[in-house]
Image (cartoon, rainbow, N blue to C red; front, side, top):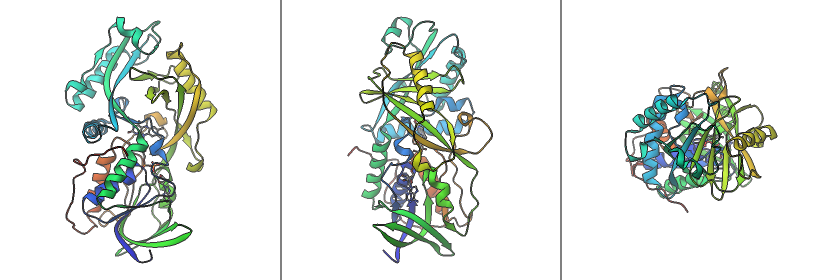
Length: 390
Ligand SMILES: Cc1cc2nc3c(=O)[nH]c(=O)nc-3n(C[C@H](O)[C@H](O)[C@H](O)COP(=O)(O)OP(=O)(O)OC[C@H]3O[C@@H](n4cnc5c(N)ncnc54)[C@H](O)[C@@H]3O)c2cc1C
């Protein structure tokens, strides 16, 4: 591989890495993804698996993020109908719920407006006679239940499907292969990776650092040294319980801290998540703590007191969020895309972001990198590429 040349090298085979591979290959660029472990081995198999606008981000006024995510949700539902399914979401409101019915109604109206009104952006109050059918949801004290629509996927399967689409356009995957270093010079980037016990050198025009919670580590291996971005890795845990939630997903408020927790179907199990805790250790060792498991179980038992709550599995992933002093729950979810040089970007890093927005993020990345990349003839449009399960 010594002396091999490609236009774009991407570090990381998570949803962002494969999304950029698809967009770069579609734009006609030779593309190589370097992944140390396996496709979707990092955060992209540890998400809540929602393809959604993010109703709660309206509370932090992230309107453009919500609008873009809702647009992407609709597009992905048409591109990947076997991988992404529309789901009913229920919001129950009790006397102690801090978000009162009128407030939730306003939020849902704004959500529907940002999505563009259609059959699937409608929301309504579930009549009280139908509450008994809501998977055993506690009805004592229940005042209102709203129902709206969002979508759910299998995040790892989606990641693999996007990589297959990228491969069909000519992108290559080197896996397992560890990125070791990058040296930027006037003409491009000299990239070193270790694969099969051997060091390989690849000459690239640009390097995309899509290493998720490892992105700061990858950035530290670039010469000349780049200014690190002020970010925190924030751990989010999920638990999987026995028994299937059949009617849809439940959007619940935690009484103690007012955070939102989702209860969702996952095959024949029930998925409950998530938590938020600043995590400063090695991203390779992240796992759900006993404290996080207890917190999620407590929420579940409060809202579904009669259901079985045997924990079959638990796991955690890492969000990359801006390092501010506020609570993790309230920090911006906007993706940050810093470059080494605004005029001639050679190194671009992806910090944060959402599974839902991967395609739009990849398009933004290509529009930044086109300042440096040569002009090539596009061979496809990612807005039209169907994604199918294996
Ligand atoms: C708890 C939680 C819940 C979430 N829920 C949702 C949700 O419901 N909906 C939504 O839209 N978004 C959600 N998100 C956000 C979403 O999951 C992430 O934004 C997304 O998965 C990040 O993908 P990524 O490609 O940036 O990173 P990752 O998936 O972590 O990929 C990075 C990859 O880089 C590889 N790598 C690292 N270092 C190297 C190296 N030196 N050499 C080679 N490879 C390397 C890793 O092995 C890994 O595969 C959630 C996030 C969390 C943490």
